[in-house]
Length: 384
Image (tube, rainbow, N blue to C red; front, side):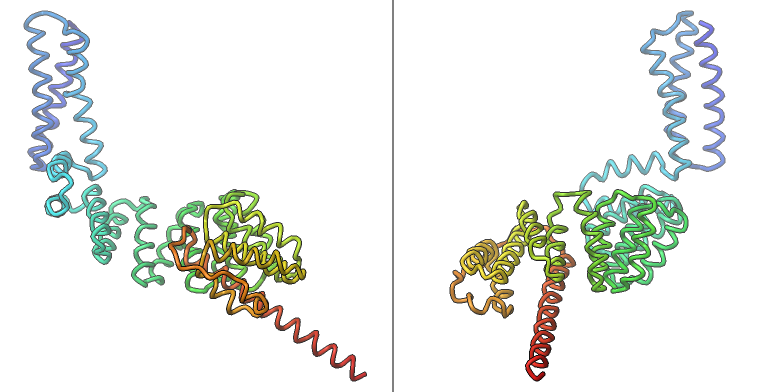
């Protein structure tokens, strides 16, 4: 009996505090809380009048509606999340137009509502209204300066809207606050890479490695960036580290094989190309077979080279364009079975495909220069 009396006194105190909040803020959310607290008080007084202790399950219910739920609502309110907006969002359901109207109504009532601004930002993204989505993510950062995910979302939108200067500034600001935030580092490095600021991208990736030394993406991104700088020794080092971390990422092995070709390390290149065949990505497979064919032509094994070329074209008929534009295949081009085009299964990004082509062109340039130098040297030797 003493327990229920103490409970009732405490709930009455909470009820008075909630009523004072309602009077001060004139917020309808407190009406819901008052209703629950009043129900708890009513049940308590019934048991007091009956001079009985309530059953355990009834006591739990009383604590839930009179104390626990009101506390939860007050905590949510401190985070700019309000009970009536939750109810309104639930009423709107999955209808996008109704949800949008309800969210705008919530924001009009609660300008600093974190939940409504976040849902509206996502809704604008889904509807491809990127400018409006930018505004919502800016508001989210203003409401919650430690919402690091929203910084990255906004930076991604800036990137998609060709506003990389804003995205770069935003991510740099975020990394000044939280230098170990891996996602921001990777995104900043990638944006700098896309803008061909390769040396700056390397600085960002290397800084991120201090906090995330076991991330495949950082090592692979460094390999890609050094490749674009034609620093193949460093590129090779980072591709090897990436391959050790994730041996299933066969693009690393393909790139390593291409770099070994540039250095004329044919046996090592062949090993990497064979490893990169252990994938279901057809673009990686076809390129690996193409380079294996090139190696076997260099080794004067024409029959095997033709077999590999036909495998490359069978997997990816579009690769015939590379074959036709590469002088080394000129003597076997007539023995390749041309295939009709088909849809290719690949997960390679545009950036990765451009990198494969860059390495291929670099190899051809190096080979042409080397051959020209050799011819010039031979002519000078004959003149002597």
